[in-house]
Image (cartoon, rainbow, N blue to C red; front, side, top):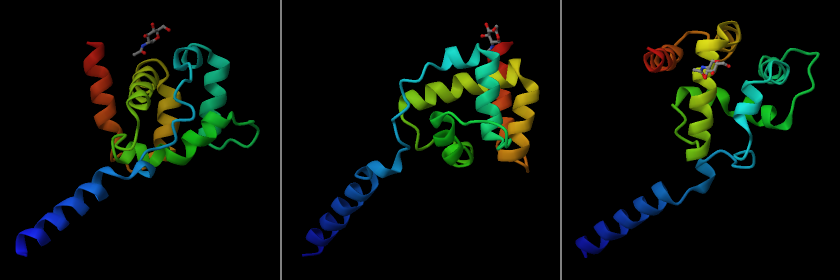
Length: 130
Ligand SMILES: *[C@@H]1O[C@H](CO)[C@@H](O)[C@H](O)[C@H]1NC(C)=O
């Protein structure tokens, strides 16, 4: 009886921990061409302005989706990202930190005002660079 109870508990834990697809962000935009955005100053600025809620911008729908999850993704080190999203995030972060410091600082002051998470990403980007 006791064993059965333990089993039941173990099974429900497994189901609860692994059976929650809603614990991932939407993969609707996973096929986005991140290089194209990063290497196009105008497009990149539009994304960043949108994330910063600068009022004059028309937000691309990908950027709106990103805006919803960005603070959470930053705080949790992309724990709810798909593998593809992790790859995109890594590339975009490295690019902004190394090549677009101004944009990175603006994003940082909005999404990580207490600088709790940014340093980790900066260290990682700089380490790769050197
Ligand atoms: C910085 O920009 C250059 C030129 O656009 C690019 O080749 C390089 O990969 C970028 N660095 C990072 C870390 O993305």
